[in-house]
Structures are given as C-alpha cells and as structure tokens.
Image (cartoon, rainbow, N blue to C red; front, side, top):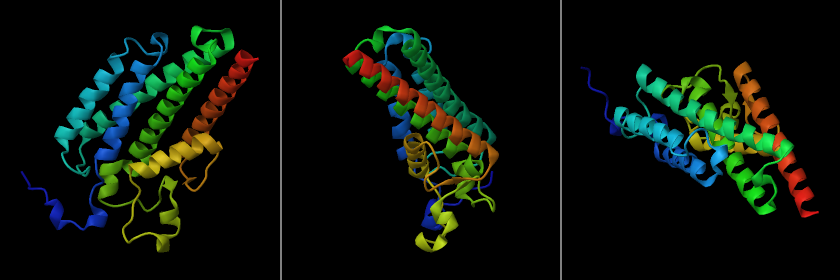
Length: 225
C-alpha cells in the first residue's frame, strides 16, 4: 500500500481543512431533534442523531486528522450524513408549516412558536451549509488537492485572488456563512452561484426561509393580538 504523505510535508495553504468546525456543527444539528416537539421529529427523536453520529464516527476513523482522503466509500458516508440532516430538517419544516396553516399546539404559544421556529430555521441553515460544502467542487477532500478550474460557487477570494493568501480555498465556515446570509437576504450576497445545482439550491433555501419566517411572524402577531 502506498504511504500517504505526512501533513507536515504539505504546505499549510493546500492541506485539507480541519474537521473540528464541521464536527461541532453536525453535533448541534444532532441535538436539535431532542429540543423540538415530538411530532416535528422524523420518527423517534434519537433515530436521526444516532444514524448521523454513526456516520460521523466512520468518517473520522476513515479519514483521521484533516479532511484530505479521496475515497468513494467515505464520499458515500458523507453524502448520506448530509441527506439524513436534510431529511430531518425538511420533515420538521413541513410539519411546522402545516401546523401554522391548520393550527397546532406549538403555534398557540408565541414563546414556544418562536423557539420551535428558531430551532428549525437553524437546522435548515446547517443542512444547506453542509450540502454546499459537500457538493461544491467535488467535496472538501477533492478541494484539498486542488480547486476546479470552473467553480460551482464563486467566492470573493476566487474572483479577486489579490485579497486572499496564495492557494486559498473555501472551508466549511465559508459555506456556513453562505447559508446564513442566503437565508437572511433571500438572495446571493458575496458568493455567486454558477452551476445550475447551486442556483437551484440557493433559490430553494431562500424560498423555504422566507416562507418559514413570514408564517411564524404572522402567526405570532395573531397570538399576541
């Protein structure tokens, strides 16, 4: 078996990104179902976190340290983890929207409504951030070995290389920021979608965010009045 190069021999600018930020974010997403009303969780509250946790451990074992190992099975595990979180957030969002339209126990109390809505909104942003991070340029392990000539998502550092260090490339925090600003501004801010999948996904996130926030605010106003 060919020996992988030591990380110390690789310039810092082209090393795989650190696993800690994405791991902490996934742990937050795993905790969200336990904070939501039971009917807003897909199955038992522990089911999705258990599956996500198992995949997270498998990824850490299969590619310890920085994220830089290109592997088909690890890629499948990583995409599976993202899909599970998208499934959970999609289910929670759909159930809350239905309750906002038809009425539900968590929609009759403004404090509970705001808390539940905030948790689901956070879960959506995490799920979309992980999706951008995992799909853009073939994923973090592929990006660690070189950015594509034609990016799916154009970050400011790619459009204007003079403002970033040499060999700069986006890491998970950049995709988390993209997801947050897209959910708040309902449009691209500093990151431009170039690929069709990126345009569709960002448009979908904006639609989900504006629908969720507007319905929550409208219902809360009715409860208060």
